Image (tube, rainbow, N blue to C red):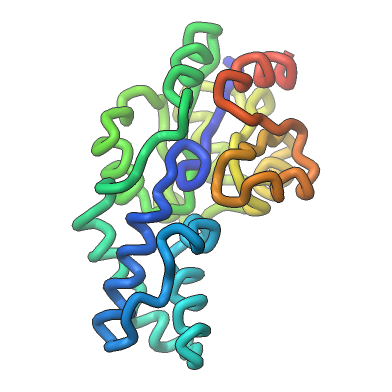
Length: 220
């Protein structure tokens, strides 16, 4: 079965505000105030918790790897308590998922967000059951860009890894698809915007309504 696997943060859903609020909880706890801006720093947010902490401490003038390690669990706990207050699915995302399924594709999610948090987000958005698989950062011993999580996401969705593609928004997603030698599709409406064109993916989409036709062409 042909399979389309989706990244989560910045691809299926805009999770940036809730992520940044969790990071700012750490900074406020240290008396540093809100070091990240929910609007201006969206592209940093979808690169992960450690990246947010690193950037915040950089702005505070002191990047201490040990402090990042100490604050990371605090960030995860804060985020777990508030995963979807401001999180929204990108326009047309679930319509595209349902069209793909109607066209005979399997669909799944492969994210570098911890699995439990990814499940919590999808549950909060009411869409978890739409996907045949979900692989998170800690589901396997390795994470993207290692191809093993993508392969597992395809197989658990009931698909053939060599007849699959990955929809994403970052160099990590591109490298993952290339490591497995499958097509990559980049969304231009995530925090990275049109900068994803510089990655030279196999296809760009400007709205989710384009994805079913693009997937059919790439996996023809």
